Amino acid sequence: MATGSLGTGVLAELWESASDGRVQCTACAHRCTLDPGQRGICDVRINVDGELRLLTYGKVSDSPLGRPGTVDPIEKKPLYHYKPGTRVLSFGGASCNFACQFCQNHRIAFAKPEDLELRDVSPTAAANSATDQHCESVAWTYNEPTIYAEYVRDGAQAAQNEGLGTVIVTNGYFTEEFADLLAPVLDAANVDIKGFRERPHVKYMGSRLAPTLRGAEYLVDRDVHVELTYLTIPDLNDDPEEIRDFAEWAFGLDPDIPVHFTRFHPDYEMQDRPSTPIQTLERAHDIATDVGLEYVYVGNVPGARYSDTVCPDCGKTWISRRGFEASIETDLSEPCQCGREKDVVL
Ligand code: SF4
Ligand SMILES: [Zn+2]
Image (cartoon, rainbow, N blue to C red; front, side):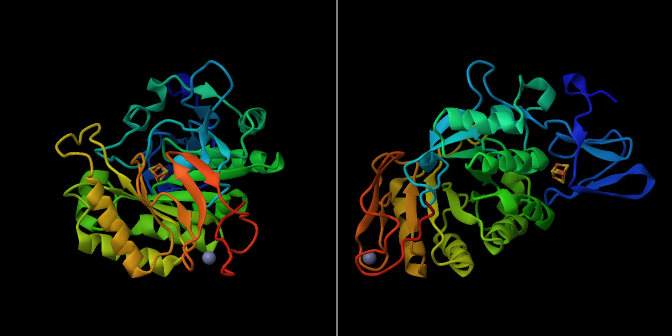
């Protein structure tokens, strides 16, 4: 069965056979059960004659010109405690398993793969492009990496072979099977938590909350460096009680986990509310700090307070930031002047 210009893709690994020629995908928490010919919610995984196939293996939504990928500061993911001050080569693909009404990448995240101009980039070519462009790691970002897990895993393996790191930016809505597949070759992840109440999560994101939290827990349990983003949206998830519940969950995961409260800007189908006031972000910062989290940041705000990394014990600045530019103020491989180990992956 051909599927537009995508052919029948490649055989996936994260799936199980079900009865009557159906298959169940085990990559993300939707766990779609698919009849022959049917695609999953993500539109890139399909049952072809009783096998689950991935239509977008090796296909990225990148400009067809120049070297593959986009060079970013690692701070832009955001990752503040993983290789600070280095460059990362970013890739994204087509479609998503969420339906966020405020998606900033809706052009690719809501498109069917056959409706986008996708570029063929092998895992090795992705890693080589990162080396050529003086990047220390490769990021799978822009759309949800879970849905093309097997390609991301192979890209991460190729990066590791080149001495590079791999990071993902994810909504966390993946299974333990996905975590087992990826964790051995994954260095860091930013997990985007989009609120801490079940009903708005279903209404505005098209997905349940609990699996996203479990996704972050799976990676922490597997010793992947994890940072959390909380996109703070006015009148949707900015209630102080909700922020406190989120912060208490994050504290339970790891008091050292970096947390980024980022600013919402109206986008896509959510134009009915303003950008997040800075006071709201600073209030979220104060609540999370009060709960005991040690590294809490405010993001998406040029010149924001709370963008530097400071020692939680003595207040010495380890890394200062202006926008996405990081200045390393101290030897990060040495303990702080107060004797505390610096919680930064170099
Ligand atoms: S990745 Fe998720 S949405 Fe896509 S087919 Fe698998 S279970 Fe369904
Ligand atoms: Zn100190």
